[in-house]
Length: 184
Ligand SMILES: C[S@@+](CC[C@H](N)C(=O)[O-])C[C@H]1O[C@@H](n2cnc3c(N)ncnc32)[C@H](O)[C@@H]1O
Image 1 (cartoon, rainbow, N blue to C red):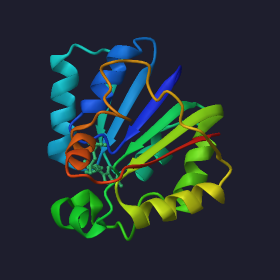
Image 2: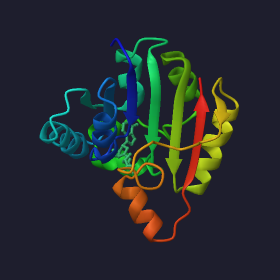
Image 3: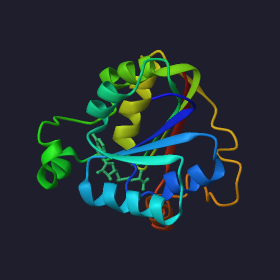
């Protein structure tokens, strides 16, 4: 893969990737999702919105990144509401049968960092407190450097942080949303 590339890791049904691809037509966005229904829904959304700068991969994120992303190539990685319940993924999806824990581990961040060019942005959002504590500690031990999340995305089309359906639902339930930005 060449050029200005950003990943949406666990892109769900494509809300975020479709919006950001429209916002930044000169950047290539790759959405990855292990769940076939979600990957298909994202793909349909990208096609419906005629977004030629976004593609969707139905795959497990770590596998996909290892096999397809060149070192020092990424401009950003977005990881929004990563699934905290791995058993759920294992149950519903054959691709996830080998998964043994959370995606966002020190090992994963080490690998992701090698794929990022200097200055690349990593953004993570979750409503899961213990996962977030674990993620924050993994980021602190990684080569990423935490920085303030300022002015998330300069557009009125993004509500709150990232504007996904999950973010809206959890906010409407009064859930606290944890977020983190780091730089490679
Ligand atoms: C809770 S949803 C969030 C979707 C979207 N990012 C959002 O904010 O609405 C988490 C998504 O991550 C996907 N996912 C979980 N683990 C994954 C993995 N290891 N590789 C790729 N996708 C994964 C799930 O299939 C699911 O679609």
